[in-house]
Figure 1: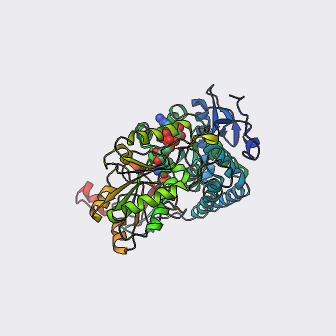
Figure 2: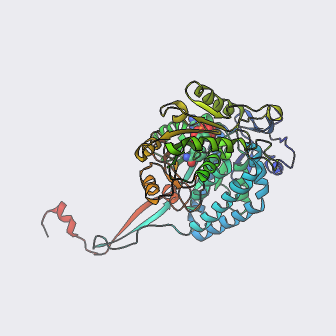
Figure 3: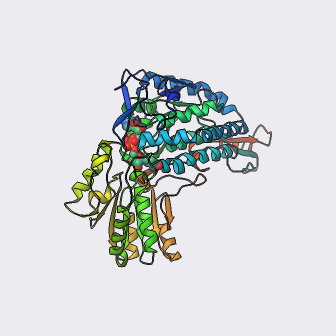
Length: 514
Ligand code: NAD
């Protein structure tokens, strides 16, 4: 391990490294070093090399970040929506100027191909920032009125306070943005803990906010482990709400801790998205959609297509064309222009994914993939795109979230059966239905229990529409105006209009005396 605070990547892979020279904690508008006494290294998963080392946050750093957010809250929540909106517009402009730095840092720490970070992660984040700049001026509520006859009632939609957020490693920049933007647009201040594997772009994001003129303390980042910094943040008495994106198992633990102080909770958890292909579907479109939807971000996407249910007449043809397409996908260096798919986030995650596939060999057919590539990719956390067929519905590979480039395909006969199987996991984040019959497709959108159902596509997201789960995929919405429901509290204000001392309803207390 190198000296903490140092970076070890070439400038073309990590052009922003100088910006993070002072440490990996961003508190009250400045980078500082963590005080846990332990260091951690960000590893490039494409090579296994350490590219940035830093001191992890301990409880004192979390306390300092919460205190900074608390101090910033009265000023920021008291700013007009127009002032907050203007700051967010400036923030979007700074992000756009630094887009290439963000794309390279995200590719470096996650192993994502540069074309993905350039075309998806970074522009999506800039668009989200611009969206929340507009949305900040547009909070919704019921209209004021004399609902009782004798009073005027209205609602105030108010900021909650300091938000404590925790994010995963699969889309570190976008997950930071999805948590930070609606929270601050609504007037809250925030402390975010990114995954310790991937802190770089969350730190650059917070720094860009300060450079754009957001007041110190509005956005703070603590980079520590889940057990230490994460749990301390969730339990903190000065944090009013916990928003968490990550696995269902950790989400349950976070909910337990947050409940002890009656915090609001927002949970975006795991997924196991079904991909339902009816027998009238366009087979070519479905096969392309399945491969792209399963492999995006090397399958480390909570909405990725993971279970393809294909109606019997199309089943064998779908298996054959999906396998053939998977074999054309090029694994390689995330920074090379010809690369379609990068490594997984770590060797640990790669081995976990390989374990699922290896165990499945006993009860299912591995049609293609299922291998760790050798040769020049051997040092990275690579795994070949994998198609598994003929697994039973109740098997591990169909029921558990794998979070890797693995698609399982199963046949079904009737429409009823296809929809029943699609709903048969504990998850409910996203799904897609493939058909050219509007009645069939429309039925699928009604009956699939998931927070998002695509028809004849799988994966696209947009800032204006909500993202969030059903069932054990959690609750609460990211993106869209709906996220303000999460990050605001609604107050009913009621004015008496009669100006009389003894009001009609007082009879219930005073009886019929005048
Ligand atoms: P994870 O649950 O292991 O970790 C997520 C975050 O929680 C990390 O920052 C981690 O440090 C922290 N953490 C771990 N233990 C903690 C604890 N005891 N207390 C507080 N914080 C703790 O998830 P991951 O492996 O980083 O990410 C993959 C998971 O995230 C998948 O399950 C995926 O489906 C999910 N995900 C969901 C969405 C969504 O929108 N629903 C989006 C992206 C990822």
